[in-house]
Length: 504
Image 1 (spheres, rainbow, N blue to C red):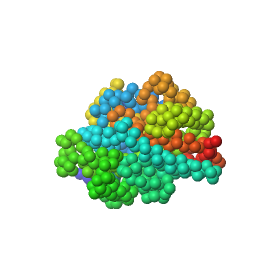
Image 2: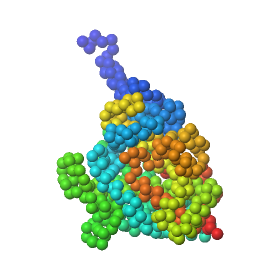
Image 3: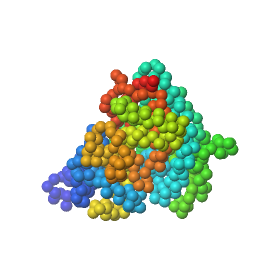
Image 4: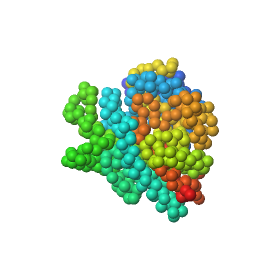
């Protein structure tokens, strides 16, 4: 039979292989066309991944304007639905949160993070979230405020030294040390004092954890072929996070837990780890389905979320402190208003404490405006568990839905002159007149950032304490505009170089 073919069997097989390869490369790219959803044209195999080269936030901005706030892209061969329409955002994150409960899972994050809130799903996520949430109640935050205040005093002491020397310095380095000290003390009762010891192993390892590059060859491979993540991890390659860094933080948590077990005084602490230990349910440590158990946390969940809390609380908060100070240095009138507010409230109350910080509304407006301009997460995601119709938009089961926070925060119709720093956007009247889903620095719905209140308290304490003593100013090494790394976060390229002047 093969002899009857006009070409040799070898060429038939080559042709068949070429067709199969072509189908593999382009097969998923009809997804959005079939659903009637527009989007930028993908490249075979890469999809739209290479478009992130100009900046993922900028790419989202372009698509947001071009495709009327709802569009589809492909990361490699993976379809991603991006939804920037605020009514749809509300329905997906709140009204239909029972369908869009879970977040996208990136393989290769390591055993520790597999038990963290960002990866846990459905009943397991709800159970662990309910155990963690009490950590951030008003009562607990008020207790933590004493520790935050002490760390803030050390932070200001370093600023004072720089003011006396008149030297420029990278504020990101000092802010990172401050947030590391706060997280270590409020979460685990560990006194790191990295402000006086900037080379402390905790700081060094936290920095390594956030050394992420979209265009690292391994990262590209994992985006193109997600199934390779587990293979790479089993071969000893670091996929998303350096395994040595995760081992370091895992061992640190183990050491603190051992201290709590052997020391009654240590076990009396009221912090994140102790609340998790009190919620420990040994039944969850046994083999079997965990969704049968309705309360408590397992030992692995304690450790995973402790490490997650440690590292997640470090980078984003430090960046936001630095970027707020940068905005104030470039906008001296706004800085004057913050200083006047701080002075007036401290004079009225006699001290700068938890209650005083909560009265500083203009300072909070400046922080909010900074988070609008530089959101800690430029996107967040949800996964559709079943076929859904949301405001007439059909979303098939299994679809990954992204909310383009950066693009929404730079929508000129919502935020006129979005490139400008305007704290007045966050007056009570402005907020009431605006759709609440136009501002999403901490996500939205029941799966928003659990540590939001602690982060805001840290930010305000550090800045208020600083502005009692000094003023932020620019210098010849200040980069204007500041450069943000292409990581879908608010990581700063090259640091934030400023000067401080002692207030007279």
